Length: 285
Image 1 (cartoon, rainbow, N blue to C red):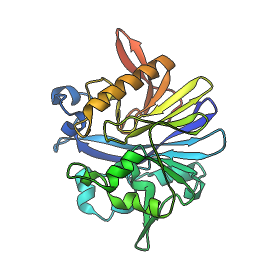
Image 2: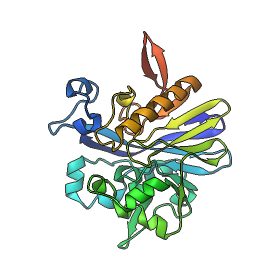
Image 3: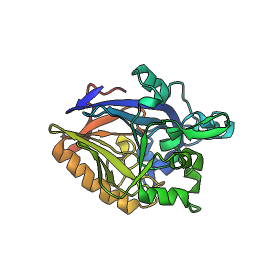
């Protein structure tokens, strides 16, 4: 657990999976990214299914993203393609902290790709329903529009069973741009990876933490030109990275990397004339 002012933050995981390393690093040559992100015999690199659990000063329990979920455990092709490993899941992490799904008050989805919102819903007796029955789910309006009206390029990442049931249960709240959820907690629309991608920012008592989602999925993606091939709007990614990393450095925000399998968070510092990520001692791995 890490304290950011009056907020309690927990880095929690829904397991691990693999994606193509070339797609994860776009135009960056493999000889560069493979040094810190070794690929397997299918050119896939290991990634975490990271989520963030927080308790706000008002006592609300908030989840940022929900991982993959168990809905795909009966699909061997899916599991093999992405080498999914979920021995410990998001729901294990909640239970270890004394929480049940009914205790979650708010879910923030950075975007609606299957590895970020799969845990939004569950399948029970053949029916898909919200996994967190008392929660509001915060999604950018542009993201919802694109997820519900996908095109050939993004359709494979938007799986309707992960989000339509939330809308049907009237638990969906659409926002447009920067939006304060409660004092000290807001979402920032970044675009880039998707048109409606958003990050979550906590600021309290002079401290801050920024959950980056797929804007900067791992430490290796901190350099400005290191942008995923998956990003639909890479120049928007570049501009958002430049802006938010400058703010993070100036204000000493903790950066939370959703997909980094080894280091979930760190502070952007200068060392020997270059920028490095320094981990906080208290955040769980």
